[in-house]
Length: 228
Image (cartoon, rainbow, N blue to C red; front, side, top):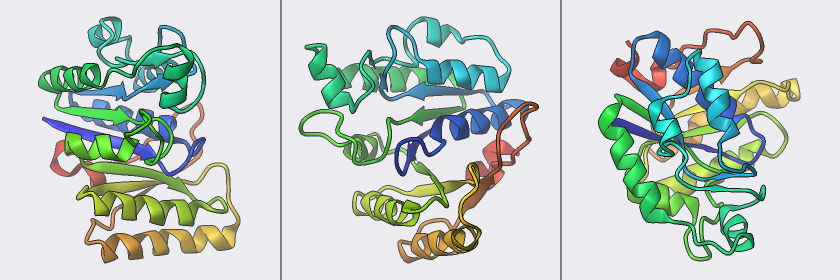
């Protein structure tokens, strides 16, 4: 049983595509893998991110999708979960998320739990995403890129995780859209440097432009023997 928490360093960094590609790679290797959404905002009654993941994996919806286990909290307004819940006059049900993660993790070898935005996104007025992820005890996978400002966000994310005792199992470096080539050449080196400083695995998988046909990307550096 392995649950990985996947966070972007920011919004629109390619997190959902990265999660879909990781699930696709594990699935084609014969690993029993499923993806989940910690919280889905901007949808009504379904998760478009999960639909994207299933399409990339080349599989139909899972029974857990239909049962609501893979997206236990969905809100209509596209905003931070604390605000999306407030606008619907609802409370984010953290226990429902905990129960869903526990149940799904019993059924699959690997669960890829996708967060909402970055690590400091508020789930509630009092609880940040990173605090909840740390409580779950999941290794963290960070999705980053070479766009201007990303190095700052990546280092802050690594430090936020380290200060809470989380392990960064790996980073996914999204090379689409293309960044400034000078920045792109240096950022992976600096990311590895700060991972090493915090005694994290210096693992960085590069994600190319994802289009049809989908490229084969090897994530075994992150998942180790599970992906062999």
